[in-house]
Amino acid sequence: MPDSGPKSDLIKRGSADGSPLVPDGVELETKVSPSQDRARNTFETILSITGDLLSEVGFERLSTNMICKRAGLTPPALYRYFPNKYAILHELGRRLMEAQDQAVFDWLREGGIDTQSFDASAASILRIQRRVNEITKSFPGGAWVVRVMRVIPVLKEVRLESRDLVSEEILEALRKNLPDIPEDRLAMATKLTIELMFSATEMALENPEREDEITQEVCFLVASYHARLRNGA
Image (tube, rainbow, N blue to C red):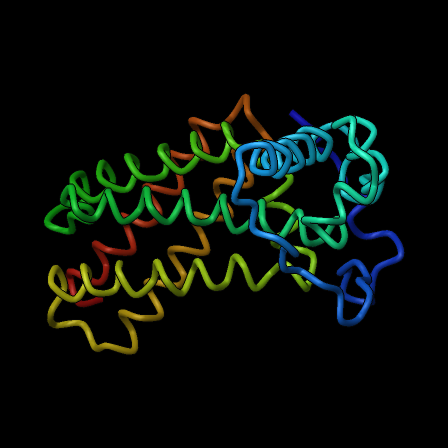
Protein backbone atom coordinates (compact mmCIF):
# COMPACT_ATOMS: atom_id res chain seq x y z
CA MET A 1 0.00 0.00 0.00
CA PRO A 2 1.50 3.38 -1.00
CA ASP A 3 2.31 6.03 1.55
CA SER A 4 -0.87 7.84 2.56
CA GLY A 5 0.95 11.07 3.43
CA PRO A 6 0.90 14.29 1.37
CA LYS A 7 0.76 13.59 -2.34
CA SER A 8 3.64 15.91 -3.20
CA ASP A 9 4.52 14.07 -6.39
CA LEU A 10 0.99 14.67 -7.69
CA ILE A 11 0.97 18.40 -7.14
CA LYS A 12 4.50 19.62 -7.74
CA ARG A 13 4.89 21.52 -10.97
CA GLY A 14 1.10 21.79 -10.94
CA SER A 15 -1.32 24.56 -11.69
CA ALA A 16 -2.63 27.09 -9.20
CA ASP A 17 -5.45 24.77 -8.11
CA GLY A 18 -3.02 21.91 -7.41
CA SER A 19 -3.70 19.99 -10.65
CA PRO A 20 -0.53 18.64 -12.30
CA LEU A 21 0.36 20.11 -15.64
CA VAL A 22 -0.12 17.77 -18.58
CA PRO A 23 1.01 18.53 -22.13
CA ASP A 24 -1.77 19.97 -24.28
CA GLY A 25 -3.22 17.51 -26.74
CA VAL A 26 -1.69 14.49 -25.05
CA GLU A 27 -2.80 11.25 -26.71
CA LEU A 28 -4.90 8.99 -24.50
CA GLU A 29 -6.06 6.24 -26.81
CA THR A 30 -4.23 2.98 -27.43
CA LYS A 31 -2.59 2.78 -30.86
CA VAL A 32 -3.31 -0.88 -31.62
CA SER A 33 -5.90 -3.30 -30.29
CA PRO A 34 -3.98 -6.59 -29.97
CA SER A 35 -5.58 -9.56 -31.70
CA GLN A 36 -2.98 -12.32 -31.33
CA ASP A 37 -2.10 -14.07 -28.08
CA ARG A 38 1.46 -12.78 -27.92
CA ALA A 39 0.37 -9.21 -28.56
CA ARG A 40 -2.42 -9.48 -25.99
CA ASN A 41 0.04 -10.82 -23.43
CA THR A 42 2.38 -7.89 -24.06
CA PHE A 43 -0.52 -5.44 -23.80
CA GLU A 44 -1.70 -6.93 -20.49
CA THR A 45 1.84 -7.08 -19.13
CA ILE A 46 2.32 -3.37 -19.76
CA LEU A 47 -0.89 -2.59 -17.88
CA SER A 48 -0.14 -4.88 -14.95
CA ILE A 49 3.43 -3.65 -14.51
CA THR A 50 2.34 -0.04 -14.77
CA GLY A 51 -0.14 -0.62 -11.96
CA ASP A 52 2.55 -2.24 -9.82
CA LEU A 53 5.06 0.54 -10.49
CA LEU A 54 2.46 3.20 -9.79
CA SER A 55 2.05 1.74 -6.30
CA GLU A 56 5.81 1.59 -5.82
CA VAL A 57 7.02 4.94 -7.16
CA GLY A 58 3.96 7.17 -7.64
CA PHE A 59 2.81 9.08 -10.70
CA GLU A 60 5.59 11.65 -11.21
CA ARG A 61 8.44 9.14 -11.10
CA LEU A 62 6.63 6.67 -13.32
CA SER A 63 8.01 6.65 -16.86
CA THR A 64 7.68 4.55 -19.98
CA ASN A 65 11.40 3.71 -19.73
CA MET A 66 10.82 2.36 -16.22
CA ILE A 67 7.88 0.29 -17.46
CA CYS A 68 9.94 -1.09 -20.36
CA LYS A 69 12.81 -2.05 -18.05
CA ARG A 70 10.52 -3.90 -15.64
CA ALA A 71 8.62 -5.61 -18.49
CA GLY A 72 11.72 -6.53 -20.48
CA LEU A 73 10.47 -4.56 -23.48
CA THR A 74 12.08 -2.10 -25.84
CA PRO A 75 10.48 1.37 -26.01
CA PRO A 76 9.28 0.76 -29.59
CA ALA A 77 7.47 -2.37 -28.37
CA LEU A 78 5.60 -0.34 -25.75
CA TYR A 79 4.93 2.59 -28.10
CA ARG A 80 3.31 0.20 -30.53
CA TYR A 81 0.38 0.07 -28.11
CA PHE A 82 0.61 3.21 -25.97
CA PRO A 83 1.93 6.64 -27.00
CA ASN A 84 2.80 7.70 -23.43
CA LYS A 85 2.21 6.91 -19.76
CA TYR A 86 -1.04 8.90 -19.73
CA ALA A 87 -2.53 6.53 -22.29
CA ILE A 88 -1.59 3.54 -20.12
CA LEU A 89 -3.17 5.19 -17.08
CA HIS A 90 -6.23 6.05 -19.16
CA GLU A 91 -6.69 2.38 -20.05
CA LEU A 92 -6.16 1.32 -16.43
CA GLY A 93 -8.71 3.88 -15.28
CA ARG A 94 -11.22 2.80 -17.89
CA ARG A 95 -10.88 -0.84 -16.85
CA LEU A 96 -11.18 -0.08 -13.15
CA MET A 97 -14.27 2.05 -13.71
CA GLU A 98 -15.83 -0.66 -15.88
CA ALA A 99 -15.25 -3.24 -13.13
CA GLN A 100 -16.75 -0.94 -10.50
CA ASP A 101 -19.67 -0.06 -12.75
CA GLN A 102 -20.44 -3.72 -13.42
CA ALA A 103 -20.47 -4.40 -9.68
CA VAL A 104 -23.04 -1.64 -9.23
CA PHE A 105 -25.19 -2.94 -12.09
CA ASP A 106 -25.10 -6.46 -10.64
CA TRP A 107 -25.99 -5.07 -7.21
CA LEU A 108 -28.98 -3.24 -8.67
CA ARG A 109 -30.17 -6.42 -10.38
CA GLU A 110 -29.84 -8.27 -7.08
CA GLY A 111 -32.18 -5.80 -5.39
CA GLY A 112 -29.82 -2.89 -4.93
CA ILE A 113 -31.07 0.16 -3.08
CA ASP A 114 -33.57 -0.56 -0.33
CA THR A 115 -35.03 2.66 1.07
CA GLN A 116 -37.82 1.09 3.12
CA SER A 117 -35.95 1.61 6.38
CA PHE A 118 -32.67 3.04 7.63
CA ASP A 119 -31.28 -0.39 8.52
CA ALA A 120 -32.25 -1.91 5.17
CA SER A 121 -30.75 1.03 3.30
CA ALA A 122 -27.48 0.95 5.28
CA ALA A 123 -27.13 -2.82 4.79
CA SER A 124 -27.70 -2.67 1.04
CA ILE A 125 -25.28 0.23 0.57
CA LEU A 126 -22.68 -1.51 2.73
CA ARG A 127 -22.75 -4.51 0.38
CA ILE A 128 -21.89 -2.49 -2.70
CA GLN A 129 -19.37 -0.23 -0.94
CA ARG A 130 -17.43 -3.25 0.28
CA ARG A 131 -17.61 -4.87 -3.14
CA VAL A 132 -16.23 -1.76 -4.84
CA ASN A 133 -13.48 -1.48 -2.24
CA GLU A 134 -12.41 -5.07 -2.87
CA ILE A 135 -12.42 -4.60 -6.65
CA THR A 136 -10.23 -1.52 -6.30
CA LYS A 137 -7.81 -3.18 -3.86
CA SER A 138 -7.33 -6.18 -6.15
CA PHE A 139 -6.78 -4.03 -9.25
CA PRO A 140 -3.12 -3.37 -10.22
CA GLY A 141 -2.20 -0.06 -8.58
CA GLY A 142 -5.88 0.46 -7.76
CA ALA A 143 -5.39 3.07 -5.04
CA TRP A 144 -3.16 5.17 -7.28
CA VAL A 145 -5.36 4.72 -10.34
CA VAL A 146 -8.24 6.18 -8.32
CA ARG A 147 -5.98 9.00 -7.17
CA VAL A 148 -4.74 10.05 -10.60
CA MET A 149 -8.25 9.97 -12.06
CA ARG A 150 -9.30 12.51 -9.47
CA VAL A 151 -6.41 14.97 -9.81
CA ILE A 152 -5.06 14.73 -13.37
CA PRO A 153 -7.25 16.81 -15.69
CA VAL A 154 -6.95 14.61 -18.78
CA LEU A 155 -7.90 11.51 -16.79
CA LYS A 156 -10.79 12.98 -14.80
CA GLU A 157 -13.16 12.40 -17.69
CA VAL A 158 -12.87 8.62 -17.26
CA ARG A 159 -14.21 8.85 -13.73
CA LEU A 160 -16.88 11.41 -14.63
CA GLU A 161 -18.17 9.25 -17.47
CA SER A 162 -18.42 6.34 -15.04
CA ARG A 163 -20.23 8.50 -12.49
CA ASP A 164 -22.77 9.66 -15.06
CA LEU A 165 -23.37 6.13 -16.32
CA VAL A 166 -23.91 4.74 -12.82
CA SER A 167 -26.03 7.77 -11.87
CA GLU A 168 -28.55 6.97 -14.58
CA GLU A 169 -29.05 3.43 -13.29
CA ILE A 170 -29.21 4.38 -9.61
CA LEU A 171 -31.54 7.29 -10.36
CA GLU A 172 -33.93 4.90 -12.06
CA ALA A 173 -33.92 2.68 -8.96
CA LEU A 174 -34.48 5.65 -6.66
CA ARG A 175 -37.41 6.85 -8.78
CA LYS A 176 -39.17 3.57 -8.02
CA ASN A 177 -38.31 3.68 -4.32
CA LEU A 178 -38.97 7.39 -3.78
CA PRO A 179 -41.62 8.33 -6.37
CA ASP A 180 -42.73 11.50 -4.56
CA ILE A 181 -39.34 13.22 -4.63
CA PRO A 182 -38.92 15.88 -7.37
CA GLU A 183 -36.73 14.71 -10.24
CA ASP A 184 -34.10 17.43 -9.92
CA ARG A 185 -33.61 16.78 -6.21
CA LEU A 186 -33.41 13.04 -6.75
CA ALA A 187 -30.82 13.52 -9.50
CA MET A 188 -28.73 15.76 -7.26
CA ALA A 189 -28.98 13.29 -4.37
CA THR A 190 -27.82 10.50 -6.68
CA LYS A 191 -24.68 12.29 -7.86
CA LEU A 192 -23.84 13.58 -4.39
CA THR A 193 -24.01 10.12 -2.83
CA ILE A 194 -21.99 8.56 -5.67
CA GLU A 195 -19.25 11.16 -5.20
CA LEU A 196 -19.32 10.59 -1.44
CA MET A 197 -18.98 6.83 -1.84
CA PHE A 198 -16.19 7.19 -4.42
CA SER A 199 -14.30 9.45 -2.01
CA ALA A 200 -14.85 6.95 0.80
CA THR A 201 -13.25 4.19 -1.28
CA GLU A 202 -10.19 6.38 -1.89
CA MET A 203 -10.02 7.31 1.79
CA ALA A 204 -10.38 3.68 2.88
CA LEU A 205 -7.55 2.57 0.59
CA GLU A 206 -5.28 5.30 1.94
CA ASN A 207 -6.12 4.30 5.53
CA PRO A 208 -6.41 0.49 5.42
CA GLU A 209 -6.37 0.18 9.21
CA ARG A 210 -9.62 2.18 9.29
CA GLU A 211 -11.24 0.79 6.15
CA ASP A 212 -14.13 -0.91 7.95
CA GLU A 213 -14.87 2.18 10.03
CA ILE A 214 -14.80 4.50 7.02
CA THR A 215 -16.94 2.13 4.96
CA GLN A 216 -19.60 1.80 7.62
CA GLU A 217 -19.71 5.53 8.30
CA VAL A 218 -20.25 6.46 4.66
CA CYS A 219 -23.05 3.89 4.43
CA PHE A 220 -24.72 5.41 7.49
CA LEU A 221 -24.44 8.86 5.89
CA VAL A 222 -26.03 7.73 2.62
CA ALA A 223 -28.75 5.78 4.44
CA SER A 224 -29.51 8.87 6.56
CA TYR A 225 -29.82 10.93 3.37
CA HIS A 226 -32.23 8.40 1.90
CA ALA A 227 -34.23 8.38 5.14
CA ARG A 228 -34.49 12.15 5.00
CA LEU A 229 -35.76 11.99 1.43
CA ARG A 230 -38.19 9.22 2.34
CA ASN A 231 -39.58 11.33 5.19
CA GLY A 232 -40.01 14.36 2.94
CA ALA A 233 -37.47 16.47 4.83
